[in-house]
Image (cartoon, rainbow, N blue to C red; front, side, top):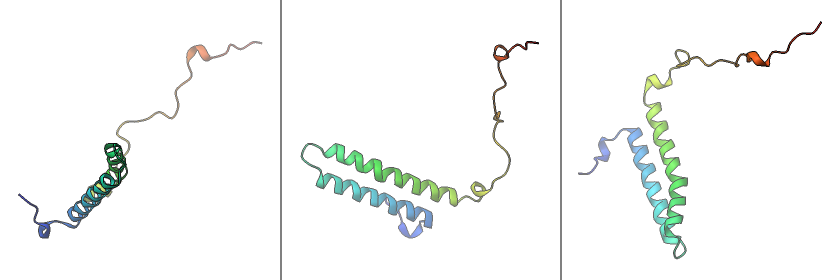
Length: 95
């Protein structure tokens, strides 16, 4: 079962292109790796290009969803600006 590239959206085509570029980087890393260091070179290429691919796909997914662009509502839970002082941290006053 293959993909019908003519039926893909612009975001899906971007993701597919990005995946192909990652695969090419991995293949190049295998071909140019010194003897005995193939896996290390492929892992390095995957780390560099793989995360770039994931960021590309994530950005495409987020920009395709109108609701993701809206900035409505506050924080999910309140975050205090500062902790109140501890009771044992208070100094005693002298007259």
